[in-house]
Length: 131
Image 1 (tube, rainbow, N blue to C red):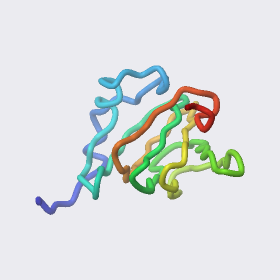
Image 2: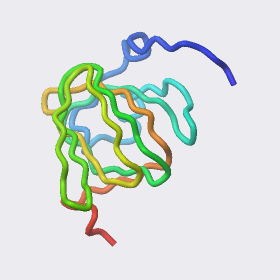
Image 3: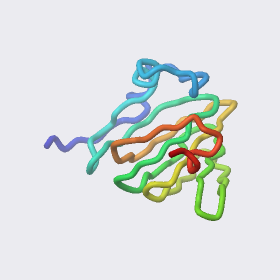
């Protein structure tokens, strides 16, 4: 295992902002997001995007989300219903294991995440109702 420090700004400098995140291809996402380091059963990632993401969840662990620049609304589906967090640069949260969540960033946001794998995705209005 290599131990090193990562310069996030350098890693993101040549990466495009992912526009229209919900319509983006896997190749578009790979171009926009940097894998900064392996972490547990996943990795630490950073990238910039605008628009609304599909719903996602991580069945193998909590996800740490930190906003590095910009603003996003993060919606997390809990048993009691949706919980909405308004997040701007410098803020972070932990999305509990297995909860569906999505980002809405019409003006664009840059995030850093520690994300366990695999990641499930859904385009349903309420992913909790999918079979």
